[in-house]
Image 1 (cartoon, rainbow, N blue to C red):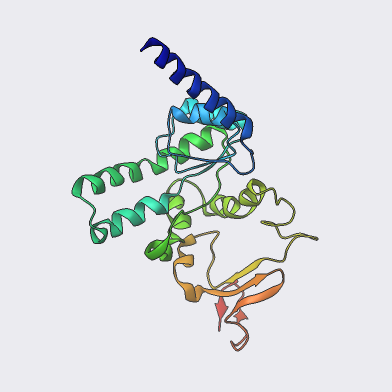
Image 2: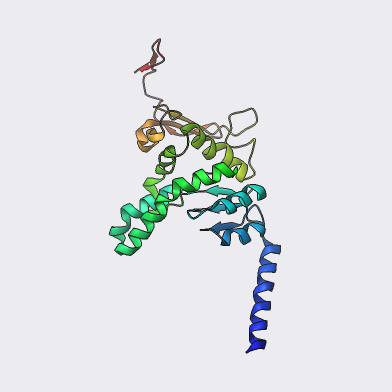
Length: 226
């Protein structure tokens, strides 16, 4: 029995060593939290998703190691909404709601520690229409401008695309969005697809609701009349 235990321990140690050696910091992903995150971070993890049980110690280590966080608030909000239709039990719905409620606290802990916060929703299938909720929900914890920076500049940095994506500058990809609304003041404008008037990818329109639209007239107070 003792020999078997020794073999098991050696196998686990070897597996951890191999995983740590093999990790590509640009590709590895980790899920959930809180204490297990510490070991995962030291293995070269670059990006942590969800993180609803994040504590101060783990957040500090994430900041020191340059590990990004994507809180995915929209995921749990959507699961609470569609869970009953998916046949989830009352216990599962209650657990999901509790984890969802930790989302804002997670963001506050991460920001205080200096963790770089990215944007990702992790929504699939029938929950895909709730993608923009990720932007709107974060307004309860941070400013709309900071959310937009996370979705653009920080995400580009995470993907090793700084200077190419997430920025309007010479030499960058001309990925631009024209909206009817003022997202720097309120991100809820994203929830209505009709507010997205034009989407440019590498300078080419992939969504264009402006071509046949009349040009707006700008008033002295910077409001628009169409």
